Length: 231
Image 1 (cartoon, helix red, strand yellow):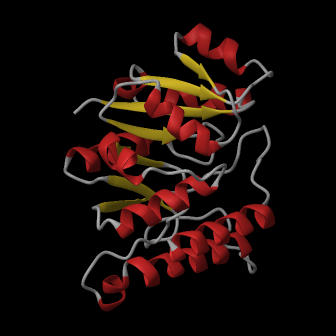
Image 2 (cartoon, rainbow, N blue to C red):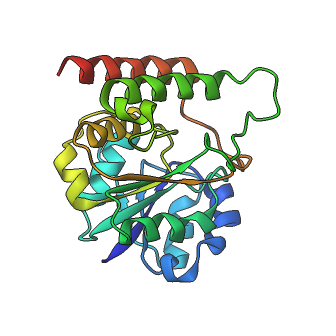
Image 3 (spheres, rainbow, N blue to C red):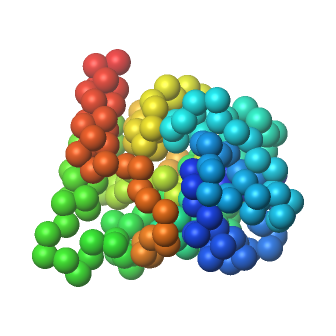
C-alpha cells in the first residue's frame, strides 16, 4: 500500500523548522504540503526541502483534506499539522494501522496512556467539549461500544489521523474547516468502517497561531452532529 503524508500548513514556519526533521525519513520522502496561503516563509522552506506544495483555492481544513486526495494518487494519507502539537514519531504507527486493515487510524488524546494539553489543569473546557461530542457520536452511530461489543472511539475530533482513499471517497465529506475530522469520523462510524486509535501525547504549540476558535468551532461541530443525525 502506497501511503503519503499530507502536511497541512498556514503560516507554520516556526513549527516546521522544529519538527520537519523529526518526521521519520521513510515518510519524509513521501510528504507533500497543502497550503492555505502562507506568507511567513513556509513555502520557501518547503522549496528548500524539495517538498511538493499544493496551494488551496479556498482556505480551510475541509478543503485541504479533499485537495490532498484529489491532487495525489496515494492509497492512503496521514494528515499531519507541523504546529508542534503532533508528535512526528506517531506517523509510522498511524500508517501501520492502515496497512493492517484499518480504514482510518486516529491519534487519540483521550484514551488511557495518552496526554491532552489540558491534562493537569483544573478546568479542561476543550477536552470536555471534545469528550461530549465524541460521546454523542458513539451514542448515535456506535451504541454497541457502550456495551463493550465494539470499539469506543475516544477522539473523533483530532485531525492527526490516517485514512484510506477508498474510505475517504466513500464518506463523501462536505464539511468545511475544522468540522471535517468530526464529520469523517461520524460517516465512517455510520458505515461500520474499521477505526483504530493509537494513544498520543499532545505537545505544546510552537509559534504561529491557532485558527480554531473554541466557541466557533464547537458550534460548527454541534451543527455537523445535528445535520448527520437527520440525514
